Image 1 (cartoon, rainbow, N blue to C red):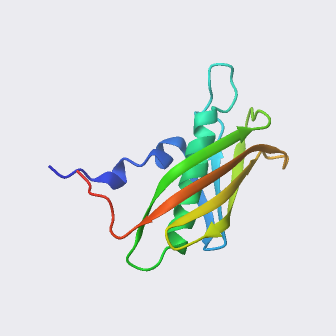
Image 2 (cartoon, helix red, strand yellow):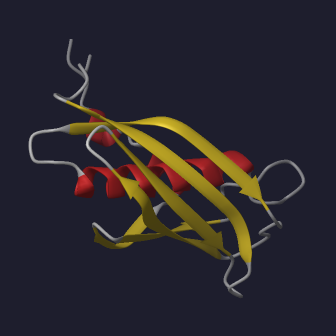
Length: 132
């Protein structure tokens, strides 16, 4: 049985919107509302989903034609809490190679203060992974 994966994207559930994209820069936003942890702060896992979403898009934009990319390692350092509004993430490449690519994703709150710095490394595959 094949599942329609495009109606089950985690980024949609979190309200992530990609606003700008090219191989050198991917930008997206995510609301704090609906993505809070019990103390009322933006959940760190939501930051991770935002970072991996933008980093994966950037990896795909930088991959050779006919290749697929998947996440290999994600790290997130949470600098300060976001309480309300939107956070904005900007993803830029640190390394684009033949078999791996690494991206920095900086997440800021509406005042422009950095709330999280993430790094995503993706591996380039010869073909897309199998879907159910």
